Length: 257
Image (cartoon, rainbow, N blue to C red):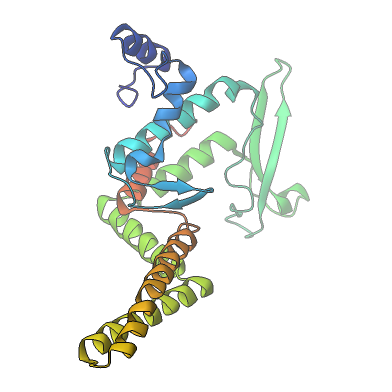
């Protein structure tokens, strides 16, 4: 309902009218509903001690739906304060004069009507050493955004999303994570060797000693798996679907937000 445009107040009223309760048996309010809308468990992410572990719980919604809701919530959160927000110049340090190649910086002026006009101006032109005229902020920013959006074709979006996920997977293996995985592989090797030795050994006293080792190895194995999950969760969880949704939203979104 929220993804389809219904507001929090309307949703809470409907849930309460239908007699539905929160997990604590209470009526729904804005806070309890927002908690649900932000619950990453719904996309299979388990959180323990501020560490996130993906695919550790049954998924009940898609990444696309979850991140669509997140995007709408972020936009709505910013909305009341937009008129108070500090003016953002998107092209600061990124825009250069086409004549002299010097950086263009911001400039603003107020007319008699109290209306504020904002521009980008060439640093050298300020010193009368370049003929570049000032460019209206809205015009040049909208033009750059329009040209950038042209690059976000379906093919390029899929390529970007796949490459970002691949890079994240590569960077997941920190030095500590590699060490833990090596320890786990060594543990599993010793566990297999101990089991094979039990099957091949005829000496009862040796078999008894080997049987005593197995639980210790298995306990160590479980602990290593937990440590690996915690260490792996330190890296942000990114999916192709999530990145694709974000880039599509960026391509189609309102540039004034």
